[in-house]
Every structure is written in C-alpha cells, then in structure tokens.
Image (cartoon, rainbow, N blue to C red):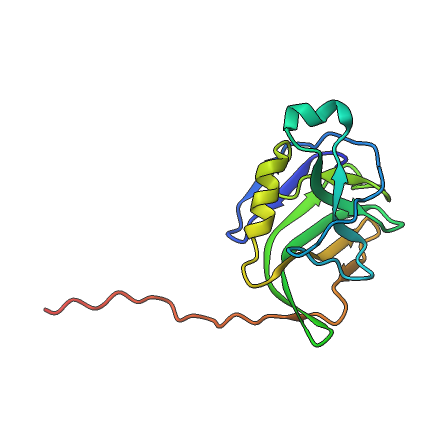
Length: 173
C-alpha cells in the first residue's frame, strides 16, 4: 500500500503494519474463493495473484492473497470481516480489523499482497482460511479519500447482545 498503514484490532489497540512491497498488477488468477466473498460492486476485493518470478523462490509459493482497489478512487481505509450469505443477502457477522492508509491512500488499480501478514504468504493464507469459521472473509467497508464510505449492499450487521458487567460477589460479614 502507499504510505504508512495502521491497523486496529477489535480490542482497540492500534499498531503500525510494515509497508508491503509494491508489485506489478498482473491479472487476478481465477481461483476457488471458498473462504472469501467479494460483493459484486465491492471497490476493494480479496484476490489471488501470481508472485513475481524473482520472488517466488524466496517465498516458496507461486501466488499470494491480497487486496485490490478496483474503484476509480483512492482508498484511505477498509474493514475486513466475516460474512454469511442467506437468500441473496449478506450478513456481516463480525469485523476482524480495520486498516487506515496514510499518504493519500491506495490508488485505483493498486494491489497490496497480504491480508494479515505482509511478507509471509504461506502464513497469511493459513490465517485467511481459518479467520471466519462458519462464514467467509470479506472486505465489508471501504472509506475513500473524498470522505465517502461504501459498505456491502443489502448487508445486515449482526447485533451482539450486550452482556451485563461481571459483578464481584459481596463479602459475607
């Protein structure tokens, strides 16, 4: 991605994520997307692309997962989460993390290798396949440089029950 990237986990901690190397933009490989879901009009999608030949030996792999900006605008933030499809509707079950991109964001057409761990395609693929048990990994929200926001059309955001705070029992005196 362009510039510094900051990620936040659901726990609220924010950390800098190392900048991924810029790569050429080869055509996305057609691959079974059994563990991810790209909404038809999503401006940022999960894709599998070929690793440049010169880097394949170092990684021990021929392709990696990554995120592609297929919109006509700069992307300055995105949320990755877990979704399930039900009768043509998408239900967002959880948001795993969000990423803010500094220095103007990711340009249209930009591909950033890695979803979870930049620099280790094997571990990244393993994390991606196991992130959403019972659902599929998806970009669920995208923020653009002009301040506009896109989210999965027709999505129903899952409501989490509010749990009562745990109270310590009063001592018996």
